[in-house]
Structures are given as C-alpha cells and as structure tokens.
Amino acid sequence: MDSNTSEEAKRYLELAREYGTPLYVYDAHIIREQVQLFRKAFEPLPVRIFYAAKALTNLSVLKLMRHLGLGLDTVSPAEIQMGRMAGFTPEEMLFTPNMVAFEEIREAFDMGITINIENLSNLEKLGRAYGSEAKCFIRISPGFITEKESPERQEWQKRSKFGIPLSQWQEMKQIVHRYGITVVGLHMHASHVVMEPELFRRGAAILFGLASEFPGLCYLDFGGGYNIPGRHDAPETDLSVLGNILRQLYSENREHGLSPEIWFEPGRYLVARAGTLLVTTRIVKEKNGVLMAGTDSGFNHLLRPMLYGAWHDIDNLSHPGGRPVLTDVYGNLCEQDPFATDREIPEIREGDVLALRDAGGYGFMMSSQYNSRYRPAEVMLINGEDYLIRRRETLDDLTRNQIIADIPSGF
Ligand SMILES: Cc1ncc(COP(=O)(O)O)c(C=O)c1O
Image (cartoon, rainbow, N blue to C red; front, top):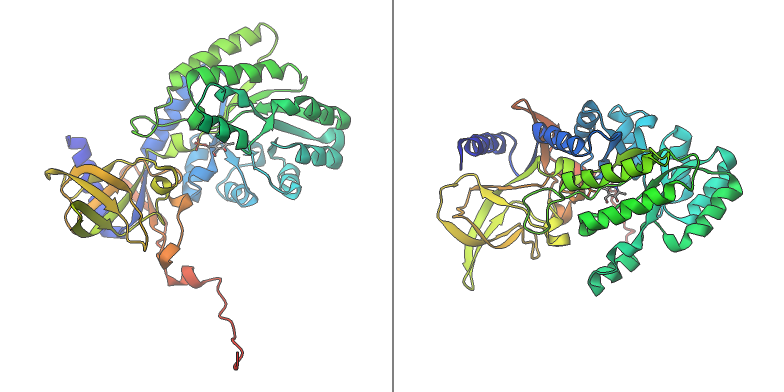
C-alpha cells in the first residue's frame, strides 16, 4: 500500500467506526475526475453529458452532477421528480424509458423534458396526441453490430428489447410524416458488452448517416455503457479512441452541412470508481478445504457479482499487510451470496473491515431488504469532510407500508 492508499484506508476505517457497516462511501473528487476525463476525451466537439440517474440516484449525488454542469438522463417519473428536487430544470433533463405506458411519456413531454422514443407504438401515440407539435428522439437498435459475435451474443442481440430496429425504419418514418413529428435527435445505447471501438465507429456512422433524413435534427446521442478502467471482468472503454472516431466522423459530416450537438448518458463511468462498500467480517471458517469469510452484507447490498458475475476488487483495510490467502468472500444471507471466489486477499480475520471497490454504480440502487436486513447508510466525502447522505434503514423502513391483516376468528 502506498501512503495515499493507507491514508484512504485509515479514513475509511474511521467512517466504518462512526457510521457502522455495511456502508456506502462516495468520493465526490473521483466523480469530478471522471466527469473531467469524459469531457476531455471528446474535446472540442460540442458535447453535452446527461448523467444516467439510474446508476446512483441519491439526491446529493444528483445535486453534485448538476453542480458539475451535467444534465440528467431519467427513466421513470420518480427519477424526473428527484431530478427536479435536486435542482434540474426540464430543459436539463432527458427521458429515456423502456416499454412504458404512453402516459409516462406524456407527463414528461408536458413538463418540457426531451423524450426518447424506442417503439413504434408510443411514436404513434405521440403523433396522435400532439400532431405537428410533437418532438422526440428516436432510439435506434443497430442490431448488425454483433453479426460476427458468438451465437450467444447474437441471440442476446435478437432478444434485446431496446430500440427500434433498422428493419422498421420505413414504418417509423411513415409515422413521423403522417403526424408531422419533429425528430430532434437520434439515439443509440451500445451497452458495455458491445463497446468496442470498431463497433462504436460502425454504430456512430449509422447515426450520422441517418441524421440527414430529418431536417429538424439537432442532436445525436450515444447513450451510456462506457466501462471503467482496471477491471478483470471487462475491458476498459478507451474514451480517447472513441473521441478520435467521433471527431473524424464529425468533420466529415460537417462538410455536408451536418453538425449536431453530441450527447452522452454515462452512468457507471461517472460514479462506479467513486463508490466503495465497506463491510465487516463476522465469521471466518474453513469448509471442505475452502477458506470462507462471511461479512455483514450480501447480494441484498451489492447485487452485481451475483447478477452479472461482476468483479469488484476487495481490500482488507484492517489487515493490509496480511499474508495473501485464497479466500471466498460471502455475505450473511440464507443462500449462496459470493462477492468473490478463490480471491487472493491479505488474511481476513473476524472483525476486519473489507472495502468492495467500484461499487458506486448500480450498487445501492439495486439493493433490497431481502432477509429483512436494513439497506446501508450512504456517506459522501467532499474535501475530506464526510456528509451522511442517507441514513441506515431501521425496522420502521421494513414495516412502514405494511398493514397487519385482521384475520377473522374461525378462519
Ligand atoms: C439508454 C441508457 N442510457 C444510459 C445508460 C447508462 O449506462 P451505464 O451506467 O452503463 O453508463 C443505460 C443503462 O442501462 C441505458 O439503458
């Protein structure tokens, strides 16, 4: 451990003592750093970044994102409301839902929020409701980008529910023309599984190519899905390469009179590295030759390892100099809940505080009350000061909306 990391470890151990564990800690400096890295990669293009609220929707984080000059990408009416509570104006928000009732789209549109349509059904309803007043983005599913991929990946692509496929392009345009809808932007979200520069180039070229078909088009949106560096389960997205691709496409297209604003919706890229889940080891045991550390957490607090097989680095903050030992790290749920299997970690002792890294995105947001365990508290660090931004849940939170049924006597 260098002196910076040991300073950080000391600070995180203090936080674990002060607030208890499990505890989510978010470092605002790292969020700011990620925003700067993202911006820098696409300079000097006219870029607007909309933080994908779903990754981490805590109001203080939303407020920080606005403070850093970002817009907000939302997927539900409640996310829009939370965006409003954090200070975002409708003009600063984007609504990119999937398979939702038209009423949700109407609500957002009436508020003046830019909407993104990803199926013909809602496009038709938008036209019927607003006629030539209607304006929207169209989310395209450029399915071809996985044609050389494995059969599993192709199957995934085929069943991916997102976006309007190019095979429905003409039908989509007919609806647009029938009602006089203005298509202000085209959108593509190539999630991190297909985020490879060559695929990105092909997808981006399609978007630029199609843009000229809409006279009112001002924006191209390249979604989110950008991967963070240093993980073992997926390659890093090299933003500088994507930046080069876009700069090149941009200058080629500008010659033909096309110079849209470029939008992005990163979520995890901005918050994952900033977030650490602190847990305490309660039990260390050996079984069938496997060394196991059981912590006061589980997939009820960090689902990604179970849901995606995602890798999260684990540091033993209490015993960094310990002898490295292959260990399975678990939670305390009533089923298998591994955070890591056969992971080399400095020897873990009961009481040791572990740091599960890169847990800021889709960590707390995918947490649950399973096993009637309380969801963790959340703390944000700004200039070294800690701010409690969500209290740990209590029994009241578990029971708040429950109503004890009056069981009729004699039942
Ligand atoms: C349309 C859209 N935009 C942005 C995001 C954010 O993705 P990420 O957090 O991987 O950047 C998602 C993730 O599901 C998405 O579906």
